[in-house]
Length: 330
Ligand code: 13P
Ligand code: SF4
Image (cartoon, rainbow, N blue to C red):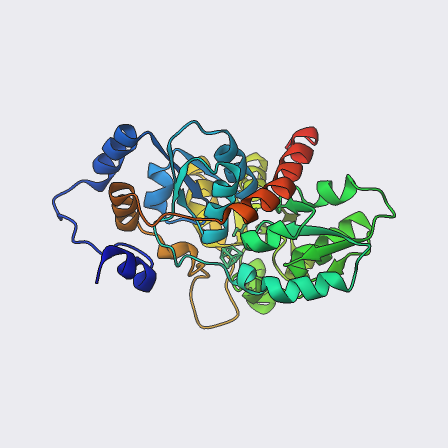
């Protein structure tokens, strides 16, 4: 099997690593040698967050991808995020440690079905959440993230008809906050959909002072109980600025690494899911490991490729989002 067949099959280069190597040192060396930058989402494992040059939410990461002067971007996140970086910086080499790090939300919206859905509403503007494929972005008018979705909808005239996809939970939340009647695609995130209302209620009884922090990808029943609703960056800032000492965190638990680092005296409790698992890790985000990150930087693969005709169309709605965000001070 050659290296390309192996990447197709496994998603990454499966090479033996010398066990005596200090991967942190090796990655630092490679970064300098190759003028590479590591961008990591808050849901990545702690080791990856610690070696990253920038850690952020989806909006922050796309802003960094648009402005970096590195030759190589190693995207420690999932496929749609690395694709967005490639669309914004097409001349750069964008690497993803595991090409199979996908997203259930992006998968819940196949482009050929969305095209038919969109055709039913010819006078509607299309806003898509960044958690979708490049092909879907190419069919959109504006992209948004959980940090700017409300601001983007509010920046449009009140009588503007809007389709919002693919996340029905974020869409319903934005519709409620803005008072707009959005046409929603019926998609959802497998991680944020399975928080248990009953188990969170029990946790709140055990920690009566704890604030519940929730991501807007959660279902309405969870959002109704929350003391704060926001993106991962919003959740991190809220916990840092709030005087309370205990927080229940209803998003992917990777964020707790930064929350704990910024607030060593506070207690962060991951909200439990509606199954027998103790944690609610995103299986896609957690496909990336420090070993895979090292190998991908060393071999400069797997590399993200986006067809030129998709880049040309998808870049416009992403740039619109970045421009509106700038005006909103985000
Ligand atoms: P944010 O990065 O916008 O908080 O979104 C979280 C998420 O689900 C990313 O996959
Ligand atoms: Fe996708 Fe949900 Fe994982 Fe985010 S947490 S990458 S939305 S599956």
